[in-house]
Image (cartoon, rainbow, N blue to C red; front, side):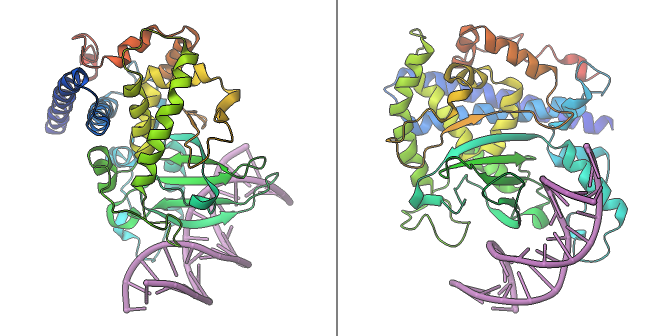
Length: 354
DNA sequence: CCCATTTGACCTGG
DNA sequence: CCAGGTCAAATGGG
């Protein structure tokens, strides 16, 4: 136990240090004429570091502590099962599946982080709902949902059995606008892809057919393309924000996009610690989720909103965020300068450990 | 033959 | 009981 804890501490420290290092790099990077790719990556790494750190913190926080029990909900499955039920992993050879286990599963599922995105896709690129998000998904079901025109598809991580990755997603095409898909993600990726996605944007060669039968193939180029377009569009958006002081809107945009290429990885934490995300939301207004004009064709990752959905979901932290949402901009600065980490900032958490 | 999707059956929570 | 979610047998592509 104690050794567990110190291992966690080590990892935590590691992550934080890493985050800081990367943040420094980013700081340097910001001085030079911009190189989107690097920046993207740096930002993602920073986020990833903090994310992991927070996960560790969450994991080791006694339930009675500051954090509401719901906090535990946002842990990835691997961590949840860490102390509790045995994961069933490879045990899944098709034999005996006790009722008990099923129950645990559904409970576990319930406890998973859940968040949603809305994505607009072009007709060519993914009407079948196979928009790529950087992960390998395997479809395991489809269901007609009452009151919706289109069936809902259920996907789970391809590596569920091999790596015990319990991330799942549901894809539901919007009734009104068939080019828009509501995607509900559940659980974070604990598979290798989950962690790799943070650092390595998939180096895929030019993909002629984004729309192959296989839901599999990821089209990073598309995403990069979209990124460019998104950036253009962002200009407008930042104007909307009315924040002239914003030193580097693109940082923001790429971060956001980072979320798109690896949303599973980042978003759930964004719930916890990304003021700016909420921000964007508030500034684009909830109703105008589909702020992109129809002329803004292809593949647009239209908008992302984070949304605690299950009964436990997202604790106090979120409400903090929400309140931040009401007051404009200030904490933007914070998020735009992750570099200047205030020593007090994440570290007043010592309480979690003792 | 392996692996992914399809699809009807089954399970579960409300 | 019903709607939503998942399972797993059948099917098909590579």
